[in-house]
Image (cartoon, rainbow, N blue to C red):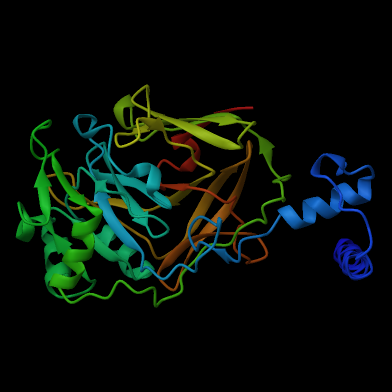
Length: 353
């Protein structure tokens, strides 16, 4: 209806212009503001031009099609590595246990690559599994024995700080090793060239999203909740919902999570919690995670929480509805937590109604 009305108005304007040779010129000051609701609607239609493309991992509309391959970086989450650089630019952040109670982050970059990323930390085999499923260019500094075998066998295109320390990876004088290794956005591209890896987006992996005007209406209202990996609060996350901008703020170790580059808090649109089997495999407390079998999951978005399932679909871990369809995400950044299936997902997530 709006489009038809707009076409009629535009056509009328052309006719008036063609017949108006003998009319007095109209002064700018004589042009009046819209007087009817229909005229206001017409102006809104003209002004609201929807951008044509949707980013695969944030669901946000952009002017240009995304052609960059996903880039996955292992980010240090030790308290001495905070605040990290480049987290605000990540489309998705995965958080999971590395060894003991210490969690590590996998930051996925595609819609934007920041000027600096880090501190970069070492690889685990299940980090590489995530990267492989996403067909991501994988970046880490160091590796476990299992990860070393996978990386050197060419499972995934990658660069590692063990081979490029001081070349592509730079050490910050503000922090002590191993919490001070960084890589610039420019060196990510140079690194891909060095190892002959394409940064073109070829495996069209993406998430499923609500339209901009859709609201989440199902679930239990939960504005504040925490994901608790252990009694060590340094690696527990507290989320608080802001109903004005429809995003969650995040705290870790009782400190607001900010991006060092911007000094601004992280704003998260979706938090997913996936329950999966964990197994300790060595004396260092390193773990093996089962990313294959699927399991229970919680979804938090727009102040609502509900239980769903997660599945590994062609290597990509996704939240799944009861009818088998993918859970729709709210456009914006998503944070994904992997938690042990024992003692169970309820033991790791605490929320207030």
